[in-house]
Image 1 (cartoon, rainbow, N blue to C red):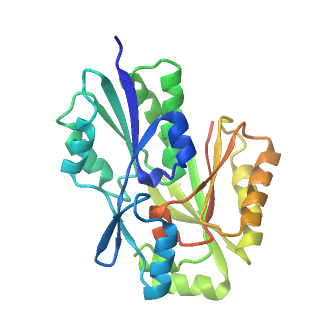
Image 2: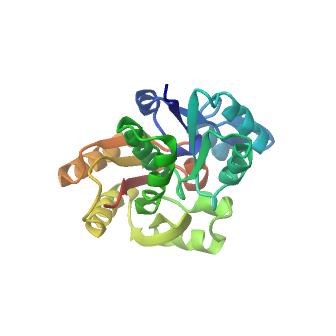
Length: 282
């Protein structure tokens, strides 16, 4: 009897509960620290808690991967005679998750640790590509090899309302944050080769910036994998999100347009009123 394939991803993939259930994907939570207190991402803390903490203290939350022994405990739950495990992590440039999981996987013959070189639903695009491969009947070793070719084709970007969270998290200088705020700039943050970089800088109200940002991103990538696209965000303005979804659907470039709310990792660095369009280039 052939073994089952179990997909596990760290919580930074920002999967919705509905998609996790649909594709039978298990999520392993990151640690989220609010000062001296530690929580599990998506288990006993959410982005509302992070915003509340920021407003009360002026400080941002910190996130961390599990140590190797915790990953060992996780992998041990899936016996090698029954399962092969595909474990997906955030980029190694953002976290020690990949390194720690690789150390843990050395004790198992049935665990394949895959670095997404990405964050948020950029990770999830790789995860769901693997899920599609399982449906097609591929084995775990085949999927681990094939999905590695998907990783460099993922296009991840976000336009953010304020640089304050990136500044306080050590991702940009105070001078850059101050200058952006004074000039009312809304930078596009891109993930390229597993690292964050600043792309085009927009000016104006974030609700008005988002449509131009989406147009620019789609115009810059005319050849996409039609299977799916994500709009991932930390917006409270429902109308702005609905308008973004409508704009992407109207482009006719994708078969499935999915919405997810960004989790604690993205929120810790980008803050409220952040929105991204994420897809795979053909």
